[in-house]
Image 1: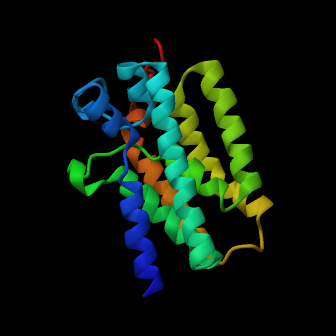
Image 2: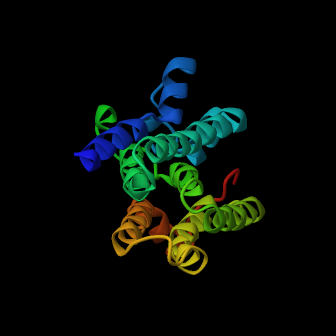
Length: 196
C-alpha cells in the first residue's frame, strides 16, 4: 500500500511543470506551442529568456528534491528510488498536459541528489561544464543519463538493492527515450546549440 501511495504522490508532484506554469500565467501562452514544443528548460530559455529558463530549471529541480525528501522522511529511505522514478514519469507524462511534458533532466538531478549525493553531484558538475562550454544541452543530458548509473554503481555500491538500481536504470532509460529525437539530430550533425 505504501508503494502505491509513493507512486501516486510522486507522479502528481512530478506533473508540476515550471515552464508550463510560467508560460501560462506570466506570458499567457502554452510553451508546448512555442519553439521546439518541449516543456523543459532549454525550450523555456529559447522562448522566455534566460531568467525564466533558469526559474523553470529551479522549479523542476526542487520538485524532484522535495518529493524524494518528503517520501524519505515520512515513509523511509527504501522508497526513494521508486519516488524518483514516478516523479520523473509525472514530469515527462503529465496527465493534465495530455501527457506531453519535459524530458526530465532537472527533475532527475534534483531527486537523485537526495538519494546518492556524490554520484549525482559528479554528474551535475560534468553536465554543467559540458553544457556551458559546448552549449549542446541535449548531448550532455544524454551523457548524464548514460553515466549516472555507473557513478551510482561505483560510488554508492552496497547502499541499494537490485530492485532500487533497476528503478534508477528505468529513470535514465526514460530520459534517453525522451531524447530520442535529439539523438537522431546529433547523429546527423543537425542539433542546434543553445543560443545558436
